[in-house]
Length: 117
Image 1 (cartoon, helix red, strand yellow):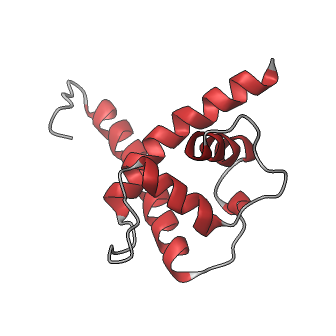
Image 2 (spheres, rainbow, N blue to C red):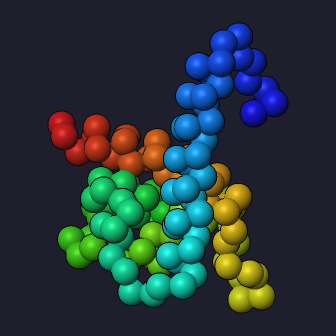
């Protein structure tokens, strides 16, 4: 927020609205991943998103046909955000999820573009 400069109030309102949506998604992912095991990834992700993340994490051009659970996708996103996932590490927090999600969005769209061809 500090680096954004607003000349008009409507730009500030738009920035706050977008930031609130991103924060909601990050917090919802963190909450669901910690508290409700067994959910399918489609509850929060489109198929091209989790498939792209899978291909990036496992360095393979072919994603699985079966949809993974949200816990798995969340751990992949956490790895993209820098989480090491050691035995003694705490579960990934919102900052790690945010960092990973920013990378995952680009990976997902690139996967979507490349698989259309």
